[in-house]
Image (cartoon, rainbow, N blue to C red; front, side, top):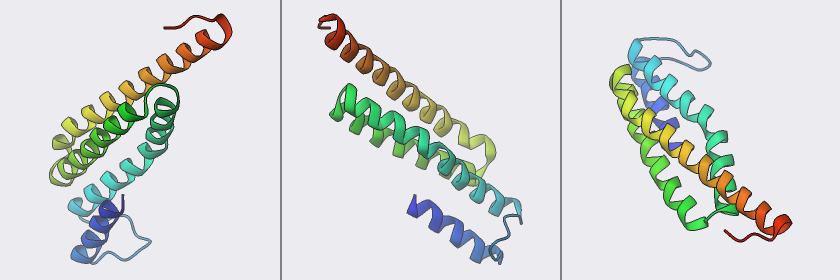
Length: 121
């Protein structure tokens, strides 16, 4: 996230846009919006990552987290070039979040079945 914030800073300097302004040339707005979108997705990512790691598998959660970071970088780089180029990174991000969510639900369900119904899956 620090690198993405720095990219917004570089874009601000290049286009002479002083804070707190968030509008300017399309190139700046795309960079700013790409960063904001990453910030908006971060809480959902952390919740699903931690839940998957706690209830399913820490190793799988960590590996999926690495894929998420690559997906967000792909998204950011695509968005700063063209709004249509953001889609591969966006779709990969959604796939990672869905995977983490499903694994978290499976892990929670498995834990509940084991604890309360003595069923080992």
